[in-house]
Image (cartoon, rainbow, N blue to C red):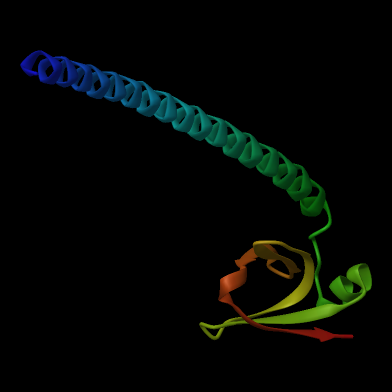
Length: 127
């Protein structure tokens, strides 16, 4: 009977050791997958940001050529409307909103400005 208990005990120890080994390998594989996914995400994000900067750079060059406005009427004539964008801090900008994404991009008499969406309190279109 003692030999049976010893045999079972040895078998149990072997099973626990094998389970520990396989769990360790499993955790290593999961860590490698997570690391690879994070690397892919970083590459994807950096590519996305570089693409966005390239687009903004190209767009900015095009816009710079046509932001030499002397009056609000010239802006209205070029873009077909004039808008007042009011911010939570009390400032107001008058001009033409030319794009809306994470920023309001506006042409004003002062030039091209970008206003973060979270700063905008209201937007009124003047015809």
